[in-house]
Image 1: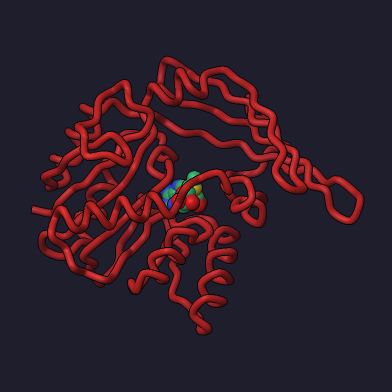
Image 2: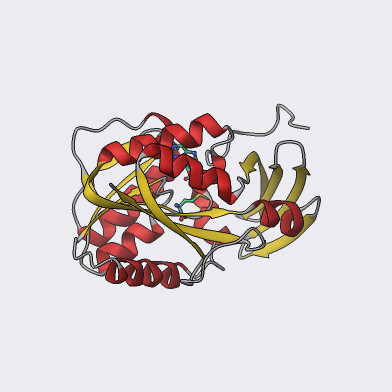
Length: 253
Ligand SMILES: C[S@@+](CC[C@H](N)C(=O)[O-])C[C@H]1O[C@@H](n2cnc3c(N)ncnc32)[C@H](O)[C@@H]1O
């Protein structure tokens, strides 16, 4: 299905990402994580956000008095993130252009987050397993890994084989999804038509996300050395396969 005209994910859309995601209630997500930190009795004020993207959450953490560090594979997403944090802090910010499948840092951190589908972009079970192991190594003793994931149900039944049209400010977009039941991978052809100075230019990106059974997520977390709970996103109810998005809280043991 993928054609050569489609760019790699999160390359060309970076400057438009925040506009496209303006419907997401990031403050509620950050407040939820603060409730998780309170529940697990953590007072650490340092957050390392994996796959931080354009840094919307990092900015919110910073405003709440946290020290922040971000990592992302996409250079263009990090550029947006860097500008945002620099504007807020008035100084340059440490960000890492890296891949969470091969994360290898010398420092350890008390809290690592990975939000908004980012883990679903790991399309092979071995990649998710490697990421969990890397995060475990990068956490301090009793450190917490807090992450969300879309479920198979979300990819199969919500996104399905549907095409959506949207208009956000100066952007018209078409989101064409296809779900492959064999491997639980959802493929998205995303086309943006952006109006600038009276003209339209077009951007095309191809994205793929994989849904994992909760039992697989649980097995890989255990194997990586975590004790954990899986919640329905934005709640403290146990997650189940019918949820659309789950939240994992994994403690290094
Ligand atoms: C849907 S965006 C979410 C960004 C941000 N966490 C947020 O909440 O807005 C997914 C992000 O994951 C990043 N990403 C995907 N695979 C990655 C990998 N293997 N290593 C690091 N970053 C990755 C992408 O570059 C993108 O910025």
